[in-house]
Image 1: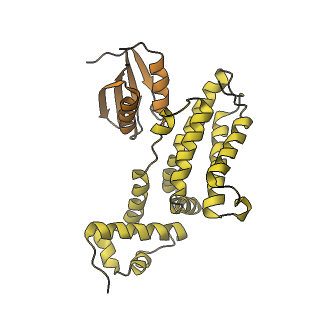
Image 2: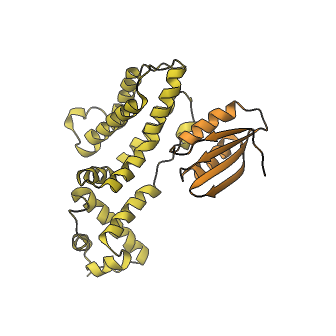
Image 3: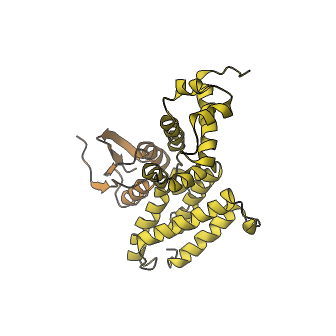
Length: 202
Length: 76
């Protein structure tokens, strides 16, 4: 017999199960029946909380938006040179993603499903980091603290290396990098990135 | 209406860029002078409140209209 839950608890349990299934199979690979079956309830119970599968998917995305990283401490606490701030911001971002890799899987699924709106949603989460790299590089080059590299390409390069580190440790759980924890791996990649852009501390 | 001494446009930028730019601009002001910041990131409201709390500057005004936020910050 299914335990009766309060509405808020039921809603939370639906969202938790839906997130795992969307992460594993993508939006198109999951039906409302699948989610209901996994929860051990009838589809009617789900429809009481969410009018459609689309609404349920959006609610899962809303949860991500609600837990967006705060970079205030990373920005204000500690040295404020580019390399130091970038390291602290990236640590906040990486820890937040690693705490719930299902979101990273949802991002991969959204990209494969050619869903522009959802892909934009996930890209937006990266934008704090890529904006910081892109806009800082323009100033750094002016001040002679970095090489004259193409800022947008550098931002993409940075996003690529951080994303690959997250994939290696959180998705593939690659044996190849087993001797390095995620933070160490990311710190080394940031070091390489700073060298690549010819960064020097002020 | 509150006057200001310097204006900073951070529209289109994601947090924490507006905060970083504001921090830089405020550093160039004298004590008591006011910076006006325009932003579009919804997270900016919470971030500027936290920024002023932590940095000791005074958030004189925080207004929102048409998905745009304006902050007036007095340097302390």
